[in-house]
Length: 296
Image (cartoon, rainbow, N blue to C red; front, side):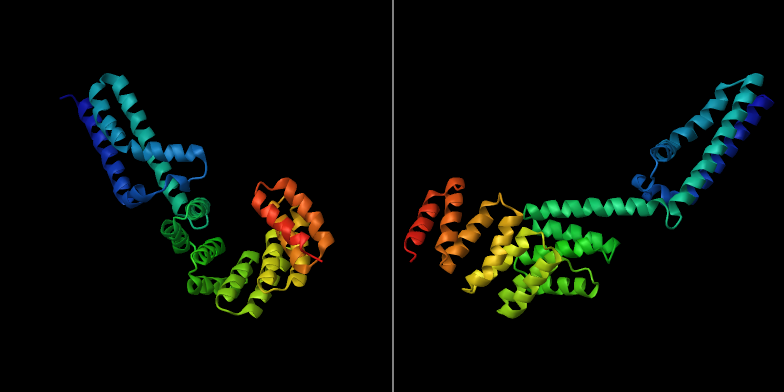
């Protein structure tokens, strides 16, 4: 075997050894590195290329020198070795960048958390409570102070009437100063279920104060007062709900019910006409008409 072939084999062996050392050194990162942790598409593609084809490069690096001969083979082999060395350096810098604190992984983490939260919300809308809860808990395992996950969990617990779990979650949000209008509305529902109307009223009012332009918060207060036979207290909140969402048939019906209970015939007739024209529930409309006709 000629001296050139021996030189080429030696270069190939050195290339293989250097590549094997770097791959061995970073095997854990190669196995676990999440492509989404690289922000730039160009860098992501480079990472995929380097990792996914690493064995192909090893094979090509060993076989190509054996196919070459003469001076041309020597020059080509040197270029191949130099190119492989540069790729190894790029690979090393790529891993260092991926592991650097406060860099790309944080961007990827934020994206991952957003995806998980959207998945949890979708599952909750489909009433898949267990799957939704696991998604929210996965978020909290990565970010223990993620307020959106806590809010999602608490709302889900309230809908399932798991009031102790909801209460604990809402109280944690209060301690974090992250309670929003939905948190106070949830606490109001919990207080109602516990037979504490004074606290329920306080919580519903706080929810409405935090989001004064949210029709549902005013409607919740109106319903709360109607349930306690206090239509006079319910009226301003029912009226405000319809002002904020004038196209809502549900809130129109709430004001009609409130006006009838107050005994305000003029207000009841006015709202009944609007309700009659928009509602497809003829039986309910007829029931309101009979109640209005029976008013003094």
